[in-house]
Image (cartoon, rainbow, N blue to C red; front, side, top):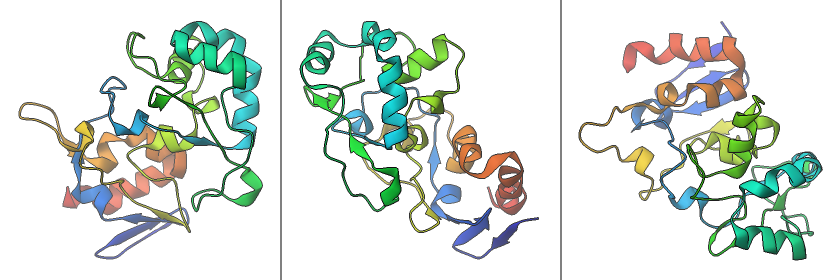
Length: 199
């Protein structure tokens, strides 16, 4: 088993998983809550930007009219690459544009989820990560920084504040597919062996 456990972390597949993934309880993301994770801008790697650009004509009908107008004038991302601790320099991350306070790909008129990239992939049977930025897909789990993975503890997030009657699970169980995208199926099995007795 490729895992090591301490009181505060579980190391799996070369990543240190913070105890918050065990201790915080959450419900799976509904993609419909319009919480702060959809406010402002997300960052995407250069290769993801290029994939979105190739598919953009098919995504445009899923956008808010205001987003479509901005993209027609300026494009969907900022031309200047940004610098973030959760990206390697060679990934050349760029900010996605903001329209009326939300990500350019946010659309609350979509059925089943408010992310146009997510909706496009689901409609066509594609892996969501083929277009959706990793930082968005993983949320509220952080993108690894120096091999460290934790929970983004934003008080405004409904997924981390389940109300009475809502199913709440430890984050590592509620966000299984997200963690599997980081660790692989075998790595996630190691997480289960390491933490399930403590849940």
